[in-house]
Image 1 (cartoon, one colour):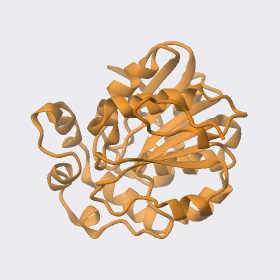
Image 2 (cartoon, one colour):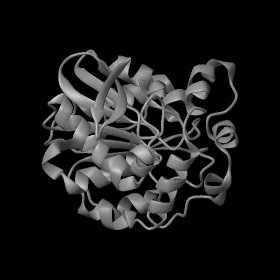
Image 3 (tube, helix red, strand yellow):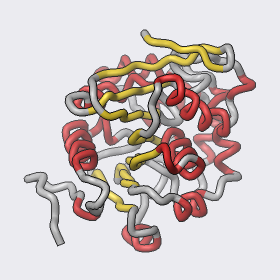
Length: 262
């Protein structure tokens, strides 16, 4: 286990591989743990980091740090401590929102973003997410499969107060405004069967700036990286392989995994 001290509190993280930096940010339920397969897949060419937000996993449970602003600034402080000047960000749920907000505030520190289960700009988060216990939410979003017992155990350790503070802040956040402020390539990933609500639509994609692109996983729920890991990791690899001049519109989910060239 790797830790560092920020604001006199412990932040837990893990790192794999060598190369350019890549930072994974977990969601509403969970911890760094469920990113392990994606980290392993990326570690051949990237130095892949994953950290626990305040109140999650092995990081400190100091309630004064649970605001969304503090969770977002944690990313910048972490990068400073690791000597990371600029990074690719891969976020999920809460991590997707924090990554988007951080990128808008620190454009020069973000190369590109891959955001999974980012709430739609006009789509309120379901009341069940705000009112359920952590046990119930883990069952609902992650499921009870024996193959996910490690991830479930990690998820259940989270402080529910950290989740609720973040949700309260997100309700006041103008995600549409953030999306239009972002000036970096951004790949949006959705599970077609996500219980948090209807995923993004092709109509939404047409309204977003041209540097956004959406991909849908038809057999996935809230955790495409666990429901369809091989496809998710291949999409991640294709996303990372694009250079800054290439359009994300080339990225498609196909059996043969070829990029569409227009």
